[in-house]
Length: 212
Image (cartoon, rainbow, N blue to C red; front, side, top):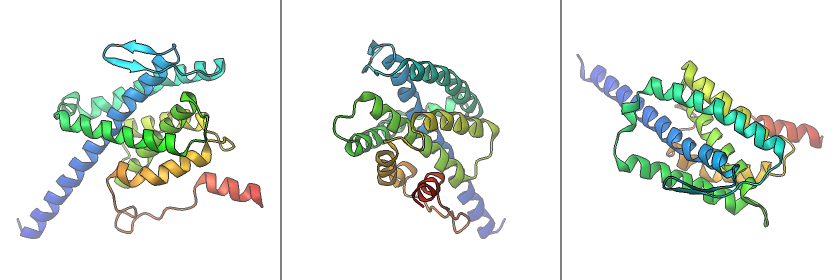
């Protein structure tokens, strides 16, 4: 085997490891947020070692989030099976990293929300930011595994329901996203070596056409 071939194989293994661990990290982020919705909608309080704040919302949103939570759990568990549950047994530093990323996006959400926004608005923005993390990772890694596609799609359905195109939370979410996206993806090459050209987002197009 030539040195060049060996180097390429080592680099590919490294890239696969990075992709695998980042996906695991985002799953570790997703779990406490969906639990925060689940227990928050029940009035909050203590559950095990975790304390959850109440999330006050209307009955329709409560029913919808509860329904989607079940679908997201199912899709998440399918991805975990593909990755292997043992792959999450990687030491406390992994979970500290996940907690740090969750704190970063939580802080950004609070920072950019208008004065007087409550727990529900925070949860809507944080949930959308986690969705964008999964979405960007899937694009950057060209991950086409059906289980991953299903999880991203299901999470996106919830996120886009929580913040629709005309929501006053669109701009706070967008500001928080641009502030945190490099941190979430660990400062990637967003063009993937020139392979990716990021076009106008659906939201940008919608707002441009609405203003015309």
